[in-house]
Image 1 (spheres, helix red, strand yellow):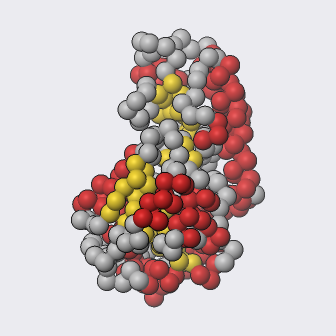
Image 2 (cartoon, helix red, strand yellow):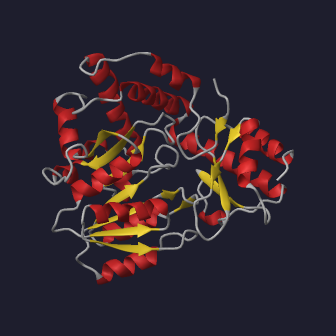
Image 3 (spheres, rainbow, N blue to C red):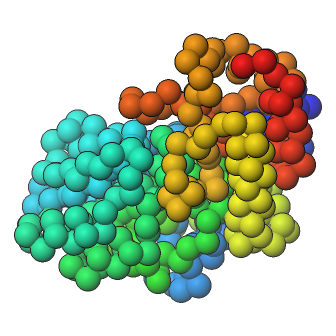
Length: 362
Protein backbone atom coordinates (compact mmCIF):
# COMPACT_ATOMS: atom_id res chain seq x y z
CA UNK A 1 0.00 0.00 0.00
CA UNK A 2 1.36 3.43 -0.97
CA UNK A 3 -0.92 6.21 0.32
CA UNK A 4 1.63 8.68 -1.06
CA UNK A 5 5.13 8.79 -2.52
CA UNK A 6 7.84 10.04 -0.19
CA UNK A 7 9.87 12.55 -2.18
CA UNK A 8 12.35 13.01 0.66
CA UNK A 9 16.04 12.17 1.19
CA UNK A 10 15.21 9.19 3.41
CA UNK A 11 13.19 7.55 4.78
CA UNK A 12 11.96 7.15 1.24
CA UNK A 13 9.47 5.22 -0.84
CA UNK A 14 10.33 1.52 -0.82
CA UNK A 15 9.21 -1.24 -3.15
CA UNK A 16 6.40 -3.61 -2.25
CA UNK A 17 8.87 -6.49 -2.19
CA UNK A 18 11.13 -4.71 0.30
CA UNK A 19 8.12 -4.20 2.56
CA UNK A 20 7.06 -7.83 2.14
CA UNK A 21 10.52 -8.98 3.21
CA UNK A 22 9.71 -7.70 6.71
CA UNK A 23 6.75 -10.05 7.09
CA UNK A 24 8.90 -12.92 8.42
CA UNK A 25 10.39 -13.20 11.91
CA UNK A 26 14.03 -14.19 12.31
CA UNK A 27 16.06 -15.63 15.16
CA UNK A 28 19.22 -13.63 15.88
CA UNK A 29 21.13 -16.83 16.74
CA UNK A 30 20.14 -18.77 13.64
CA UNK A 31 22.66 -19.38 10.84
CA UNK A 32 19.98 -18.77 8.22
CA UNK A 33 19.91 -15.19 9.47
CA UNK A 34 23.53 -14.56 10.45
CA UNK A 35 25.30 -16.42 7.65
CA UNK A 36 22.58 -16.26 5.01
CA UNK A 37 21.62 -12.62 5.43
CA UNK A 38 23.97 -10.56 7.62
CA UNK A 39 27.28 -11.94 6.33
CA UNK A 40 26.11 -11.87 2.73
CA UNK A 41 25.02 -8.26 2.84
CA UNK A 42 28.26 -7.26 4.60
CA UNK A 43 30.19 -8.71 1.67
CA UNK A 44 27.84 -7.14 -0.87
CA UNK A 45 28.29 -3.70 0.68
CA UNK A 46 32.06 -3.91 0.34
CA UNK A 47 31.69 -5.10 -3.25
CA UNK A 48 29.49 -2.07 -3.99
CA UNK A 49 32.14 0.21 -2.51
CA UNK A 50 35.26 -1.08 -4.27
CA UNK A 51 36.72 -3.73 -6.52
CA UNK A 52 39.63 -4.11 -4.10
CA UNK A 53 37.51 -5.87 -1.53
CA UNK A 54 40.31 -7.54 0.40
CA UNK A 55 41.47 -4.23 1.88
CA UNK A 56 38.03 -3.23 3.19
CA UNK A 57 35.38 -4.58 5.51
CA UNK A 58 31.96 -3.47 6.73
CA UNK A 59 30.42 -2.87 10.14
CA UNK A 60 26.67 -2.70 10.72
CA UNK A 61 25.35 -0.66 13.63
CA UNK A 62 21.87 -0.25 15.09
CA UNK A 63 20.34 3.22 14.87
CA UNK A 64 20.23 6.06 12.37
CA UNK A 65 23.06 7.27 10.18
CA UNK A 66 24.08 9.83 12.81
CA UNK A 67 24.81 6.96 15.20
CA UNK A 68 27.39 5.71 12.71
CA UNK A 69 28.92 9.16 12.21
CA UNK A 70 29.27 9.52 15.98
CA UNK A 71 30.62 5.97 16.26
CA UNK A 72 33.32 6.59 13.66
CA UNK A 73 34.46 9.91 15.12
CA UNK A 74 34.42 8.47 18.63
CA UNK A 75 36.50 5.44 17.64
CA UNK A 76 39.02 6.94 15.22
CA UNK A 77 40.10 10.22 16.84
CA UNK A 78 42.41 9.47 19.78
CA UNK A 79 43.68 12.12 22.22
CA UNK A 80 46.83 12.31 20.09
CA UNK A 81 44.90 13.07 16.89
CA UNK A 82 43.42 16.22 15.41
CA UNK A 83 40.35 16.30 13.17
CA UNK A 84 39.55 18.79 10.42
CA UNK A 85 35.83 18.99 9.60
CA UNK A 86 34.82 20.64 6.33
CA UNK A 87 31.19 21.76 6.49
CA UNK A 88 28.73 23.44 4.14
CA UNK A 89 25.50 22.36 5.76
CA UNK A 90 23.67 20.89 8.74
CA UNK A 91 25.27 17.47 8.55
CA UNK A 92 28.82 18.78 8.45
CA UNK A 93 27.88 21.01 11.38
CA UNK A 94 26.57 17.95 13.20
CA UNK A 95 30.04 16.42 13.02
CA UNK A 96 31.20 19.51 14.87
CA UNK A 97 28.53 18.96 17.53
CA UNK A 98 29.72 15.38 17.97
CA UNK A 99 33.33 16.54 18.26
CA UNK A 100 32.27 18.99 20.98
CA UNK A 101 30.43 16.28 22.95
CA UNK A 102 33.47 14.00 22.73
CA UNK A 103 35.94 16.80 23.53
CA UNK A 104 37.91 15.99 20.40
CA UNK A 105 40.74 18.18 19.21
CA UNK A 106 39.28 19.57 15.99
CA UNK A 107 39.02 22.54 13.69
CA UNK A 108 36.23 23.35 11.27
CA UNK A 109 36.41 24.92 7.84
CA UNK A 110 32.92 26.35 7.37
CA UNK A 111 31.55 27.30 3.96
CA UNK A 112 28.29 28.86 2.83
CA UNK A 113 25.44 26.40 2.38
CA UNK A 114 25.24 27.24 -1.31
CA UNK A 115 28.95 26.75 -2.06
CA UNK A 116 31.00 23.59 -2.30
CA UNK A 117 33.75 22.75 0.15
CA UNK A 118 36.75 24.45 -1.46
CA UNK A 119 39.59 22.15 -2.52
CA UNK A 120 41.97 25.13 -2.49
CA UNK A 121 41.01 26.12 1.08
CA UNK A 122 41.47 22.55 2.31
CA UNK A 123 44.82 22.31 0.55
CA UNK A 124 45.97 25.59 2.08
CA UNK A 125 44.76 24.65 5.55
CA UNK A 126 46.51 21.28 5.52
CA UNK A 127 49.67 22.89 4.20
CA UNK A 128 49.74 25.18 7.24
CA UNK A 129 48.44 22.79 9.90
CA UNK A 130 50.57 19.68 9.90
CA UNK A 131 49.11 18.50 13.23
CA UNK A 132 45.84 17.50 11.53
CA UNK A 133 45.61 13.69 11.29
CA UNK A 134 42.05 13.13 10.00
CA UNK A 135 39.74 15.00 7.62
CA UNK A 136 35.96 14.56 7.46
CA UNK A 137 33.34 15.96 5.09
CA UNK A 138 29.89 15.17 3.69
CA UNK A 139 29.68 14.01 0.08
CA UNK A 140 26.09 15.11 -0.62
CA UNK A 141 24.75 17.73 1.79
CA UNK A 142 21.00 17.15 1.84
CA UNK A 143 20.58 20.51 3.58
CA UNK A 144 20.51 21.90 0.03
CA UNK A 145 21.29 18.98 -2.29
CA UNK A 146 24.78 20.28 -3.02
CA UNK A 147 27.38 17.74 -4.13
CA UNK A 148 30.90 18.26 -2.82
CA UNK A 149 33.84 17.43 -5.13
CA UNK A 150 34.73 14.10 -3.56
CA UNK A 151 37.41 13.11 -6.08
CA UNK A 152 39.34 16.37 -5.79
CA UNK A 153 38.94 16.67 -2.01
CA UNK A 154 40.01 13.07 -1.46
CA UNK A 155 43.07 13.59 -3.64
CA UNK A 156 44.18 16.63 -1.62
CA UNK A 157 43.60 14.90 1.72
CA UNK A 158 45.62 11.85 0.70
CA UNK A 159 48.33 14.00 -0.89
CA UNK A 160 48.85 15.48 2.58
CA UNK A 161 48.91 12.00 4.11
CA UNK A 162 45.76 12.36 6.23
CA UNK A 163 43.11 9.79 7.15
CA UNK A 164 39.81 10.37 5.37
CA UNK A 165 36.27 10.03 6.76
CA UNK A 166 33.38 10.68 4.35
CA UNK A 167 29.70 10.88 5.21
CA UNK A 168 28.12 9.32 2.11
CA UNK A 169 24.77 8.98 3.83
CA UNK A 170 22.60 10.14 0.95
CA UNK A 171 24.92 9.25 -1.94
CA UNK A 172 26.21 5.70 -1.42
CA UNK A 173 24.44 3.29 -3.74
CA UNK A 174 23.10 6.14 -5.85
CA UNK A 175 26.26 7.86 -7.08
CA UNK A 176 29.17 5.75 -8.39
CA UNK A 177 32.38 5.83 -6.36
CA UNK A 178 35.25 3.54 -5.35
CA UNK A 179 36.56 3.95 -1.80
CA UNK A 180 39.94 2.48 -2.64
CA UNK A 181 40.50 4.70 -5.67
CA UNK A 182 39.50 7.73 -3.61
CA UNK A 183 41.55 6.71 -0.59
CA UNK A 184 38.59 6.81 1.79
CA UNK A 185 39.38 5.16 5.13
CA UNK A 186 35.85 5.25 6.57
CA UNK A 187 32.68 5.64 4.51
CA UNK A 188 29.41 6.04 6.41
CA UNK A 189 25.88 5.46 5.13
CA UNK A 190 22.46 4.18 6.17
CA UNK A 191 19.89 1.52 5.30
CA UNK A 192 17.17 3.98 4.29
CA UNK A 193 18.90 5.97 1.56
CA UNK A 194 19.93 5.10 -2.01
CA UNK A 195 19.94 1.34 -1.45
CA UNK A 196 16.23 1.87 -0.74
CA UNK A 197 15.78 -0.07 2.48
CA UNK A 198 13.92 1.03 5.59
CA UNK A 199 15.28 2.91 8.64
CA UNK A 200 16.88 1.01 11.51
CA UNK A 201 20.61 0.65 11.03
CA UNK A 202 23.61 2.30 9.45
CA UNK A 203 26.88 0.90 8.17
CA UNK A 204 30.53 1.76 7.91
CA UNK A 205 32.80 0.57 5.11
CA UNK A 206 36.27 0.71 6.62
CA UNK A 207 39.83 0.13 5.51
CA UNK A 208 40.85 -2.92 7.53
CA UNK A 209 44.20 -1.50 8.58
CA UNK A 210 42.55 1.66 9.94
CA UNK A 211 39.76 -0.21 11.69
CA UNK A 212 42.40 -2.21 13.56
CA UNK A 213 43.66 1.08 15.03
CA UNK A 214 40.23 1.66 16.60
CA UNK A 215 40.61 -1.12 19.17
CA UNK A 216 40.12 0.31 22.64
CA UNK A 217 39.56 3.88 21.44
CA UNK A 218 35.76 4.24 21.56
CA UNK A 219 34.23 6.32 24.34
CA UNK A 220 30.94 4.42 24.08
CA UNK A 221 30.05 0.77 24.59
CA UNK A 222 27.15 0.69 22.12
CA UNK A 223 28.98 2.75 19.49
CA UNK A 224 32.29 0.85 19.58
CA UNK A 225 32.77 -0.01 15.92
CA UNK A 226 35.81 -2.19 16.54
CA UNK A 227 34.00 -4.36 19.09
CA UNK A 228 30.94 -4.50 16.82
CA UNK A 229 33.10 -5.60 13.90
CA UNK A 230 35.02 -8.16 15.97
CA UNK A 231 31.79 -9.68 17.28
CA UNK A 232 30.42 -10.00 13.74
CA UNK A 233 33.66 -11.53 12.48
CA UNK A 234 33.95 -14.09 15.28
CA UNK A 235 30.22 -14.76 15.45
CA UNK A 236 29.79 -15.02 11.67
CA UNK A 237 27.20 -12.25 11.47
CA UNK A 238 26.08 -12.18 15.10
CA UNK A 239 25.47 -8.66 16.41
CA UNK A 240 26.67 -7.72 19.93
CA UNK A 241 23.22 -6.49 20.92
CA UNK A 242 19.74 -7.14 19.51
CA UNK A 243 19.79 -7.01 15.73
CA UNK A 244 16.94 -5.17 13.89
CA UNK A 245 16.12 -8.40 12.06
CA UNK A 246 13.19 -7.21 9.96
CA UNK A 247 15.06 -4.13 8.79
CA UNK A 248 18.14 -6.19 7.93
CA UNK A 249 16.08 -8.67 5.90
CA UNK A 250 14.42 -5.80 4.04
CA UNK A 251 17.84 -4.32 3.32
CA UNK A 252 19.02 -7.62 1.87
CA UNK A 253 16.04 -7.54 -0.48
CA UNK A 254 16.81 -3.91 -1.37
CA UNK A 255 20.40 -4.86 -2.23
CA UNK A 256 19.11 -7.62 -4.48
CA UNK A 257 16.85 -5.14 -6.26
CA UNK A 258 19.74 -2.70 -6.71
CA UNK A 259 21.73 -5.39 -8.50
CA UNK A 260 18.70 -6.39 -10.59
CA UNK A 261 18.25 -2.78 -11.67
CA UNK A 262 21.78 -2.80 -13.07
CA UNK A 263 23.81 -1.68 -10.07
CA UNK A 264 24.80 1.77 -8.90
CA UNK A 265 25.39 3.12 -12.42
CA UNK A 266 21.83 2.25 -13.47
CA UNK A 267 20.33 3.67 -10.30
CA UNK A 268 22.36 6.85 -10.76
CA UNK A 269 20.96 7.22 -14.28
CA UNK A 270 17.40 6.85 -12.97
CA UNK A 271 17.95 9.40 -10.22
CA UNK A 272 19.49 11.81 -12.73
CA UNK A 273 16.50 11.40 -15.02
CA UNK A 274 14.12 11.93 -12.09
CA UNK A 275 15.99 15.12 -11.27
CA UNK A 276 16.04 16.34 -14.87
CA UNK A 277 12.30 15.91 -15.33
CA UNK A 278 11.59 17.56 -11.99
CA UNK A 279 13.78 20.60 -12.59
CA UNK A 280 12.66 21.16 -16.17
CA UNK A 281 9.04 20.83 -15.11
CA UNK A 282 9.34 23.12 -12.11
CA UNK A 283 11.19 25.75 -14.11
CA UNK A 284 8.44 25.64 -16.73
CA UNK A 285 6.05 26.59 -13.91
CA UNK A 286 8.24 29.50 -12.82
CA UNK A 287 10.05 27.91 -9.89
CA UNK A 288 13.74 28.65 -9.37
CA UNK A 289 16.31 26.21 -8.01
CA UNK A 290 18.43 27.32 -5.07
CA UNK A 291 21.65 25.92 -6.52
CA UNK A 292 23.37 26.35 -9.84
CA UNK A 293 23.14 23.19 -11.93
CA UNK A 294 26.92 22.67 -11.67
CA UNK A 295 26.63 22.20 -7.89
CA UNK A 296 23.48 20.11 -7.81
CA UNK A 297 23.29 16.42 -6.89
CA UNK A 298 20.56 14.15 -8.29
CA UNK A 299 19.59 13.23 -4.70
CA UNK A 300 17.40 16.12 -3.55
CA UNK A 301 16.60 19.51 -5.09
CA UNK A 302 15.95 22.80 -3.27
CA UNK A 303 13.53 25.34 -4.73
CA UNK A 304 13.04 28.96 -3.68
CA UNK A 305 9.59 30.06 -2.57
CA UNK A 306 7.85 31.31 -5.72
CA UNK A 307 6.61 34.59 -4.19
CA UNK A 308 6.14 36.53 -0.97
CA UNK A 309 3.35 35.08 1.11
CA UNK A 310 3.87 31.54 -0.22
CA UNK A 311 2.27 29.14 2.28
CA UNK A 312 4.45 26.03 2.32
CA UNK A 313 2.19 24.16 4.73
CA UNK A 314 -0.84 24.63 2.46
CA UNK A 315 1.23 23.66 -0.58
CA UNK A 316 2.53 20.59 1.25
CA UNK A 317 -0.96 19.45 2.28
CA UNK A 318 -2.33 20.03 -1.22
CA UNK A 319 0.38 17.81 -2.72
CA UNK A 320 -0.02 15.20 0.00
CA UNK A 321 -3.73 14.96 -0.78
CA UNK A 322 -2.73 14.15 -4.37
CA UNK A 323 -0.23 11.47 -3.35
CA UNK A 324 3.10 13.30 -2.97
CA UNK A 325 5.00 14.22 0.20
CA UNK A 326 7.81 16.77 -0.13
CA UNK A 327 10.25 18.28 2.37
CA UNK A 328 10.61 21.70 4.02
CA UNK A 329 13.76 23.74 3.49
CA UNK A 330 16.62 23.75 5.97
CA UNK A 331 18.80 26.76 5.26
CA UNK A 332 18.73 30.06 7.13
CA UNK A 333 19.41 32.57 4.35
CA UNK A 334 16.56 31.74 1.96
CA UNK A 335 13.02 30.40 2.08
CA UNK A 336 13.10 27.04 0.32
CA UNK A 337 11.46 23.66 0.08
CA UNK A 338 13.02 20.41 -1.11
CA UNK A 339 11.94 17.54 -3.33
CA UNK A 340 13.80 14.24 -3.17
CA UNK A 341 14.59 12.24 -6.29
CA UNK A 342 15.60 8.94 -4.65
CA UNK A 343 13.75 5.80 -3.61
CA UNK A 344 11.40 3.56 -5.54
CA UNK A 345 10.28 6.52 -7.65
CA UNK A 346 10.57 6.83 -11.40
CA UNK A 347 10.45 9.43 -14.19
CA UNK A 348 6.71 8.97 -14.71
CA UNK A 349 6.15 9.85 -11.02
CA UNK A 350 7.87 13.20 -11.52
CA UNK A 351 5.90 13.92 -14.67
CA UNK A 352 2.73 13.36 -12.63
CA UNK A 353 4.07 15.55 -9.81
CA UNK A 354 4.71 18.44 -12.18
CA UNK A 355 1.17 18.18 -13.53
CA UNK A 356 -0.26 18.10 -10.01
CA UNK A 357 1.72 21.23 -9.10
CA UNK A 358 0.55 22.87 -12.32
CA UNK A 359 -3.04 22.38 -11.14
CA UNK A 360 -2.34 23.49 -7.55
CA UNK A 361 -2.88 27.01 -6.28
CA UNK A 362 0.21 28.39 -4.59
